[in-house]
Image 1 (cartoon, rainbow, N blue to C red):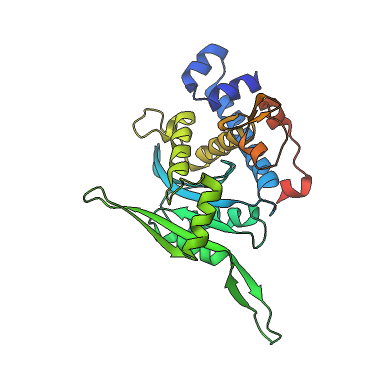
Image 2: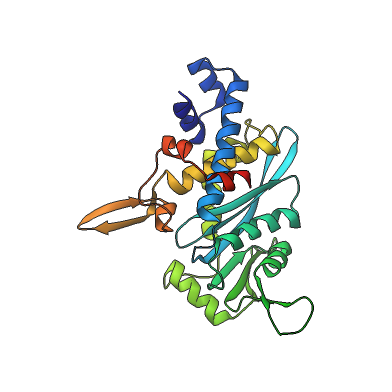
Length: 288
């Protein structure tokens, strides 16, 4: 029953409908969601944030939602090539700390010094936090703290939407334009361009799966903690459970469906909700 109920919640079934159908108290349902969300967050960190991914192009964005305690912001980042949703953070404001936590987890996921292109909107916190975390120490043989230098293959582009004239400005914020365009061609194809279309499409998917994120909805989130738990449960299902149509490949004349986790090399098959809930995170990772 727990697996069935959480599956319905994941794909947008209203809580009142589940309560009436299964005769479950709303507090019990909320408790199941909290525990599953905490577990999903540990699974996400254990599998994704281990410094083993060649991310290529990463797109990041923020979206807002209404909760019973006011407006909340959600920052997200994804890898374009695999469609893998790397991390997200819910906060009460559109702050540097919110963006910093997302960038830090992307840094933990990326292979050291691997080429990476960030595509963001015009929010200045993204560039600030990216340059803060994507640095390595340079030993010069002198006493004192070693110097920190940005990754040689780090590039940042920004897509700024102007309110007047519906003008969109695309600009290089850091790095080399030629290398940035090369990474775009590798991850998006030859017709790719500087954009944040992939993360915006992902945000639309999140709004479909999480009613609290819908711009006009009566399903307001209860609070920041519960909204974050539901978000990470949705992230785990998006990455490991539901195949993504654009990721399918042809093997021996037949199409093979793949999840973002499969495209990123983190798993070999689409998971079930039961596999996700029963996945054992090593104790050291769980304690962290």
